[in-house]
Image (cartoon, rainbow, N blue to C red; front, side):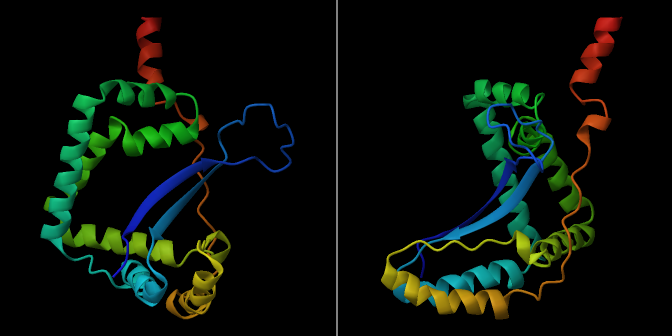
Length: 208
């Protein structure tokens, strides 16, 4: 039906309000996280592509333990394999995680720390499936009920394709997604107010 649909999370550094220095390094405490759902198709399949988007966001059955568990096991296995083949990359990510919030989060999600996190998720699935499904549903509601000011739709194609997509895209935004509830994004935790989980032990060892 389509050329494929995928999702990925992007964590980006942004300039603080009033920041006008193009040369000075950003402080690293102002970040923006966005979930992108991407897809491509031919012009005649545009309605089908937006139907897939709607199903992913609104109608996916989250209560499918075997499917989710197999996907999580496959993901964890892939991460362990990557660690063996690209250990230098994991080490680099770990080091970079000491110097900015964005890199710290990147290491947590994609670096060596993600192995423990993925294993913990698998344990949570087996320990209390009903509670885990509730967590997934809460995550979905947080995504689709967010403030519309934080949502972006980007269409790429020639004029014929864009003309064909506009009406369907507008219907998707107006009638398929929930009404904007005006929920503000939760504040980013102040990571600088606590000891860094990797640096603090080293400091204590040096004192000794």
